[in-house]
Image (cartoon, rainbow, N blue to C red; front, side):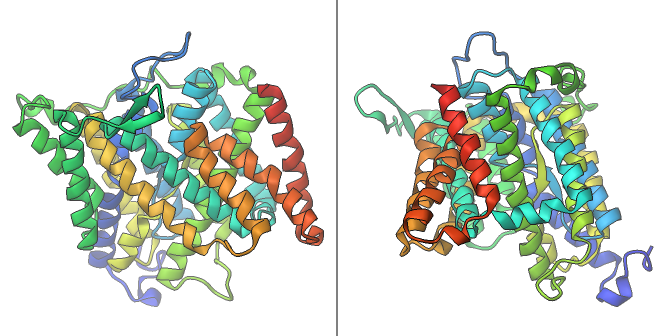
Length: 444
């Protein structure tokens, strides 16, 4: 085991790797509760006609399975201390844009995730994935990340009641004295305190304390016994295999844009995370990541598995840096994290304690973290600033990640050509320009 994971070469040991694996799990354990809440559209009272909610128990199990499989493949095949789970932002796109916005049934949306996962595997095995990643301008990648952060935060503000609908101004400040809103504000404050103090897993601990506060104040029903905490894993029957049975429904322009968005966001989510974690751990060699193909294969495989059992796109998690910071240097740390996700399957009753008010602070804090990429965009270059700003602003304002990406990618070649920078535009960007023009034509 030590030889396989190169413990001596990397200067680590079992104790360090186990602590690193546990640290990473605690830092990202919030996804087990946020993902089911997001995909089930908690906090949304009115759904489009013909649209049903996903079963939260099934999504909980699917989330744990996808995370465990992806992280295990990453640990054993790529041998990196990087964990995977259904991605924040991608789950919001799935739930709020595809299902709620477009009125596409979640079953068909899962088929779109499956299609994107299969395409990912082909692109990864062929080596094209890295080339496509390089074709998208860095500034647009940064803008997409920041825009998704603002969109997620906006959803969190809505679910918490801090922001609410207004017929006059579209949105307005909500009733800050409402008990559920006060609970959410408490969660935000606690989470901010934890993260400001550098506590690993601060988001998760913030959710735990918010749930406890909700129980103490009577806003959340307290567990009545051991059975309300630990039980057998919920069945995935409500979601299992739906991606196959509705695969024939994905061959439309609208679903093509959905699949492209799944592809695009996961592309750069994973690439950015791999580079960030690898840089922190000292894995980069000549500005390249060894075994990058294997690492990309891990999230492709996890996405396919996740779509089959019933969850949105699975991707690498930046929270893996918490484990690396604790000393993790090998895939053994990922194996430990994967085992933790498997054990978490037996704690599904805790879902009832994690209400929309409890998950809202997590969405807002993740939004803050994702918006940090704003500082790296070249705002002083107008031809860059315009598509970047439109990408960022359109996501929360149109309630659609895909629309934000589409607007930004349409304006990028236009502003670059007008500025005389035609040679800097990759041919793939022209292809995406046409695709997104067709997207708006189809919507009209």
